[in-house]
Length: 584
Image 1: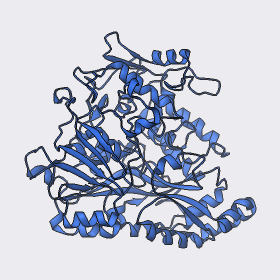
Image 2: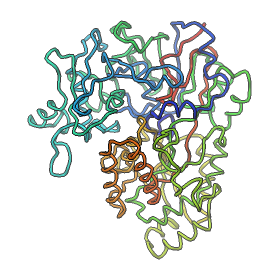
Image 3: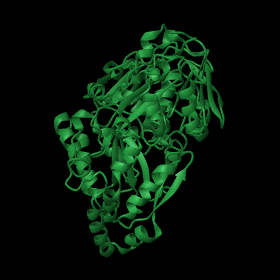
Image 4: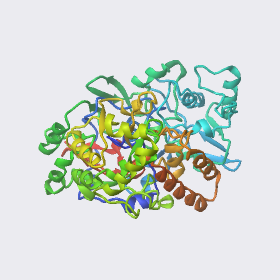
């Protein structure tokens, strides 16, 4: 989703203390930070297997790694997470704004005042109207998509007869619709204070303000979908090259430290090199041939022991529990037969796949749903899937899978024929590990008579699978809470208004009762009562098998010997890239 780097979607924030306690640190996570005094200069290089980042447009960035990267170097937001180690890293601090937001009217109204001296890379001073315009773009979902969509349902804008906002973004809206938006998102007379009027009380609205979906964009510079290629910088670095081989950023002369309390630019340049072979990246790290580089995607399973059992890498590695629940989404429109979905869950060899990925040490634990244990208040094992559920066997419960296939043979013969003759097609992101995991999966599903095929996507994975016309029967994915509330998990993954519903489940007979319960939970202000509801809804979704949960993840990072101050940034589930400097 994904996102951290391969199949993990979007970003986090879980309870800071829970994340800290749940983090497993392998020697050296913060050793580099204690070893040297901050230094400036040099070229910080990230080595990446993928051919590009999913998005650069701040309105569309929604993966944890890319948020951590772009918001560290290029894009400023109203508020930010404090880029420091440990639990304090989950605290909000002012960024473009002078405070972390001022709520009123039972948290239905939120105000942010912009600090003076902030500019775009062309020297234009940043004003409220730029934030107002930048925020409006998310409503143009036909153009500006794949980012967080909370504002579509949260802002106090009238709805049409179908329950959708009458405002459809700055490109096509009528004058009346634009006026309705401008009333919901307004600017003060001095053009420094932006006010958001919400249609419900949202006490944690300011956490959304850490995302680029609420950030300044100049209308005159907006090129719609093409803005993704070269967005205007508001942070300390600007893009000077975005090619097939690399993304290159240099210092932004219009950025001022006096107006930015969050960032300190250390390297002279920041580069991501794209399209590199994963084994080659690992060898560069192992041999330290580019000592000022970091593996942007984590080491291959076959090489992890080389990094994590050799003391010479103790200051160049980290191994953390991450905030993501990894799963495979079922496209319910394409796979409407519940019994076949359940049979696929029970025939999967979870143990073999976990062992291949490095076992609990490197790959995490078997998932019990889609709410990560790191979202502490809202987590409980569903007892429907994973450990604690009656039919769960790590190596697969083939007896149960065959029983379900026998039921499906009579109950849904067309779907049974597809599963056993034509084959189920699974969307996966291209990776060298597929060569090893495809045979494991095919052999496991074959035990229940199920055939699988593969739609291997080399670039633009999420923009592909999020397109209903392009998504196949199943899509590998993952999700982390956007902040410490499963309101950013369950509705996002399974509700009709969710921003990342890969299950296409709204036609499922079990769906209406589910969404009714989601709407009740969304309106519940008592957090303890709401937490109980999220736990119940997690279990409900697992009973319908809208996704096949796999693991609660872990992530490893490795870097070159000249990099210093590399530490795990709790709320982003990734290193704090902007705090890294280069020695020598």
